Image (cartoon, helix red, strand yellow):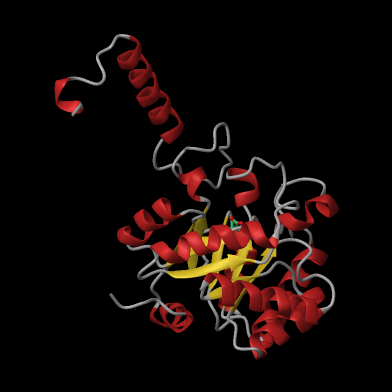
Length: 265
Ligand code: KIV
Ligand code: NA
């Protein structure tokens, strides 16, 4: 199997082939995504929400992210594996950020990193890229800044924020990012940004004009109970499926139907 690289991802934009990315946090799920042919598995800090049950992505630690990342790396034979640097590990001194970045690369075997923000982290992105580590940017609704935004609503609807986003996207490209996630911004703005960049954009709630799409795996499988924003296409209702299977199991155990003669030694 030929491994997808950051170069493959950039070439896909040139070819006009859409990029399919999903999040993954553990070995078994990552193996299923990889076998199904996903281009990129993002070990997102959304693990804080869907794996750990936190309300925001703020609390997850570098060590916790690295545990998820190692598990995914062990499963992915073809997919590019990217890891979110968690809140607090890269917003300050760029030399501290580089240390965190190097730890993730060395200790997990991941192929690249993702960081949130524009001009604020430009120097840090440059420094990490200069060290030979591929970096994906992330603009728009950047969940690590949720306490600054106050809500999870659509970003950059107003002129000033839209202008900053456009300029941030260019800065990230210049700093050496190989791709940028655009989260929850108007489709028109995302299309404009996409057309102004040589590197691919990956959208979530950012419309059809992006070069690729990403969803949180728990959301698209219908495992994240009650979460159904407009941008989400739900491909399964795994929460209900699991409920049904578990109810049948309970019934079978209680009624002594399980295990039967063929299910014992
Ligand atoms: O953590 C995450 O899942 C993400 C994607 C939604 C882009 O950053
Ligand atoms: Na994230």
